[in-house]
Length: 160
Image (tube, rainbow, N blue to C red; front, side, top):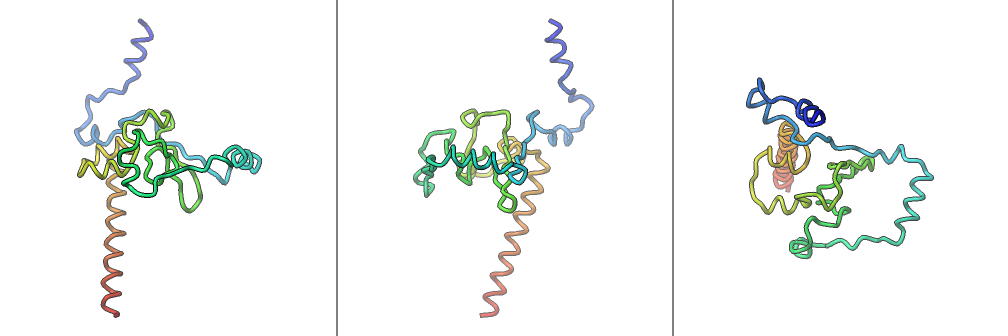
């Protein structure tokens, strides 16, 4: 019974928090973890290459090939998979759900999320294991990139 009391007392109280503070809180206790490829030794990298030499992933080439596939999606190497992200600059691997195995994800494909239609920032945060505020920041950054691209295209049309 003492263990039950310990577990209940270790849960942070939500009393005294504003609605905004409750909404901004992380829904999962475990944060994403990043594995730096630059810090990995050559010996470890070579061992991984030898181990995975024969395992060439047979990834779907179009959405039609994977839309009716098994869920959660087993193709972790796919760029739309939500289990991990790979930084194009450094090659660092970010495990979005380090406490779960791939088959334990409720939603595993970003394309499936897009097919759902519009969802709230909180729902996106739960799916990606990020806070609502971080999702809002990423949304603004993406919209700014799209606006810059639109401006470049209009300048190109003007120049022609």
